[in-house]
Amino acid sequence: MYKKFPWLWLLALAASVSYFLITYSGLPERVATHFDLSGAPNGFMTKDGYLSFFITFTLFLNVLFGVLFLFLKKIPFALVNVPRKDYWAANPERMVALHQRLGAVLALIATFMNCVFLFTVQIVYQANTSDATFQIPLNGGVFFILLGSVFMVIFAFLILRPPQEA
Image (cartoon, rainbow, N blue to C red; front, side, top):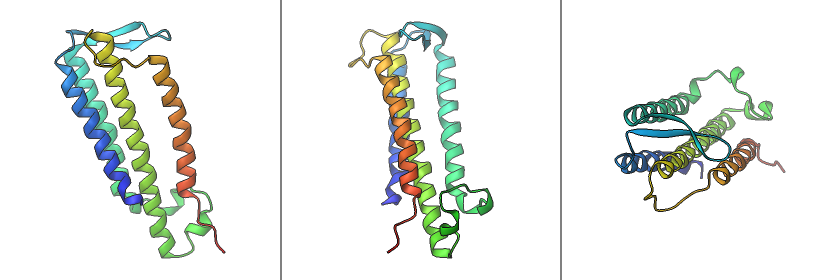
């Protein structure tokens, strides 16, 4: 089951970058990129600055998560903080299961991060153009991001919880 999470991560990354590239050409030269609590723009940057910031930020964070994902087994176990560490360290099979679960948690968090990037691209696009196909209320979107963050923590604890032993 956990082997599918990295594919979701890549799918979310591809969706975020693709949607960014599709909407980029419709943006004006001065792009509103920061908004106050009422959703009014209060920060701007150039179109090229927005392009370089989005691509750099997205790629940096995804590469960082990717490196962690690929080298997860190289991290010393003393530096890993998981519930019931004694259970996971009991034998090599459990360590393998723990690495799979930690990889799933990383992939799940990276998937959520890329979905937030996708939301951000939509908010910037709809604030700067009049031809957005659909409108997402900024405050409603932020509420769902916060709610999603809570669920990410819950899912991480559920994934890393040791199985019930009979």
